Length: 158
Image (cartoon, rainbow, N blue to C red; front, side, top):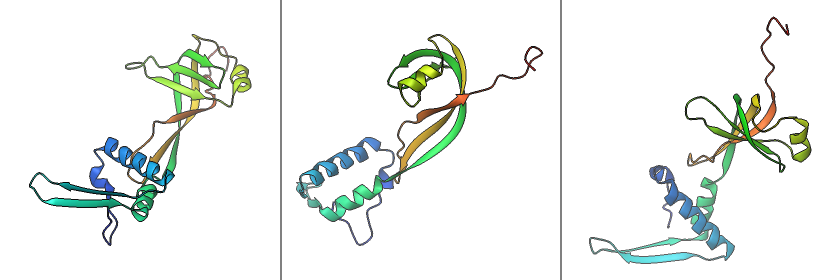
């Protein structure tokens, strides 16, 4: 891709996330082998076209994939349906279609200290972290355990 004086705007391809991901993967492969890409083809109208993906253009593609982390604190209530000693447990909610959340803790010891078992009903506070690049493409959120939600006071425990 040869860039004009003003840099190419990839947002016009915002609906084609798979195309943009493919361009990013191609750019990474060219960078890994320190290669440029030059293409020449004939369009559907018969006009000869050419394009190149130079080092400068690859740098622009890389800059579009720089991301920032957006975080939000939220509460999740549901049943523990799986646990992994690598430091995760899964909670499936009972509302709607029963969404499944993979909740991360800091390893095996932290998971065991939570003292939860499969099938337990839990109400937890998590930090949802989502990476969003300059193109607006977001990664799936990562849920990090912050703590259990304290139960509401009742006549028995007020």
